[in-house]
Image 1 (cartoon, one colour):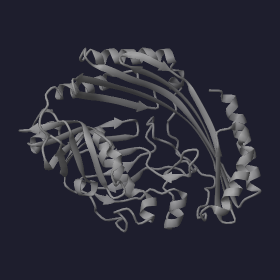
Image 2: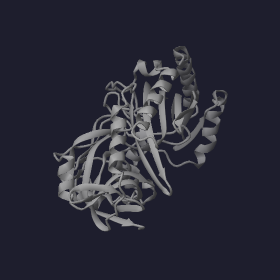
Image 3: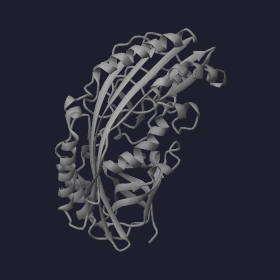
Image 4: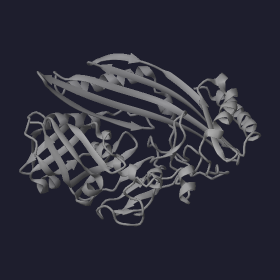
Length: 446
């Protein structure tokens, strides 16, 4: 990445802001640069090595009380941004927000030069070693792997004096194994993410080995209302998305969230705590400020079962008569919206075996397929179990097939039966223990 081009980019950004200010009541320029180097292995072999670069600029302008917006990925098209935003403004919603002025940010380590220096050749070597180690678990496995490293540079300037710049690195490692036996297909996988290079893949290999060992035998699935133990990966894909949808300030404003008028009330089990920790060093989701230039800070979302905070960006906060929680996320071509940065679920004191022993008869959910297809805002989840294990007599006896789990996250987390004593990271943006619940509906096609 060329450092000198960064200075030129900031100069053109400030020039664009000055022109936009003269034609508006408020203006904001958002610019990003993204460099990504993915390495992919398919069917046990190297498939491709790529390097991609994208950049773009977005402009928001408050004109006669309305919010005009435009964006472009064409460096030569920036001159038309102001014109496009002005054309859109008369048809846009009323602007309630005020862009932030100069702020002090608490620094957080999110860039590691070693990530940028990690060469494609080193990534290929790392990926091949990972493929070989996973294949060694079972010679019949077809293994896919992805190694990806990249850099984000974000700059924000606004007419109220807000100035924000950050540089973030990321590194992802992922492996998946597939076993095919006639019409039976078994998928096992795991991965890690960090702002730093991930050179040790032992945890990924050990997790896949454990999944394989638990899946050697096929067992019948339980039926009806069942006790279910969600592994950390299943917690991240099934339980947290509908809960976050309810905590989103936009859904609260619309009256769609089940948590409307419930701020400060206990809605979940008293042992359940959820926080947003955007200042966690080297977590991929961390950042010192959000995508509107508002400083981030640790946020208690659910404190011992009590709904503690809704997530707001500038617009939703203004409409709610609240302050932004520094939770704005955005894509280049879309307006900001509230979301979490680094989610942490509080640990409990239960061991894995203690939760299985208490369950006696039930289901462990490892991986899900289609978990986002439900009424998330209402707290619903419903998904096919891509990998899950039957528990009988307090022990895993095999994997289930053709099984669906569903429920309401508020009911399920009210009937919380246990939290694992150990937590693990999922994709560099979620850290959670296993969560043991009652009140989950399980059905099987046979």
